[in-house]
Image (cartoon, rainbow, N blue to C red; front, side, top):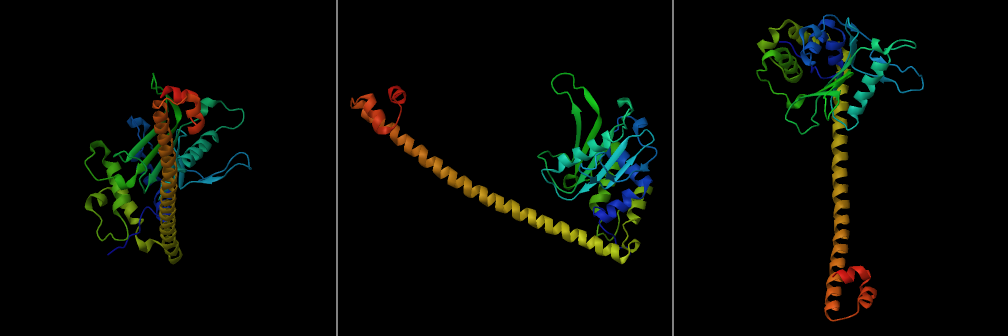
Length: 295
């Protein structure tokens, strides 16, 4: 009986989608929001995943998979194990750099081709019940006109549940592949093996396909992920406790001030009812003459 590795790990994800053009082509066609059949990808060429800036003093970046099709459209695919507040900025940074790097000096802007950024997140980050999030640059108030060039897709894997999505059958199959196959898999579902691309992708996960050093790297990857989750959880817990403590102290301080102010106002009202001069009340309570007069 074959033993399988988890496809979400760095080693396996890059092996499946970074070494097999037919698999990443199928994956992108299933995941990206193409409106017309002619928009689908028919051919893929891998590009260097290291996006080097033109200026050597600028920030360098590396993505999991980067490729382009015959039309020159670029596709960036990343597997993110944990969500952080800065991740969207990193995605925007990488896609923008891939977009502007297309043009050399003296070339026309019309030659620029779209860049699609597909991000699989093994975490949740939104209040929406949907697992699929499509971001574009859109004029909001009136025309809904879109500025083409950059498109960002974020998929929250924990929110995905297999259902009949009709024309999105391949999307469901690929997401089931990412969420159902792992070290505990004893039998791969028949509906996954029935599809040639998914079946090939499953074969790439067989433990026997990796050497000892790769397997050690695989285990180290999950150790790092586990450590980061523990550190993040601890940081969040400490932050929450600190926030609660600071909030309580601030609340008590503000409460004491509010109570003190209320007492002063009540005292000023009583003094005013006794016919004491406004200026005298102001001097004793510290309230302004206008505040006392308004009581």
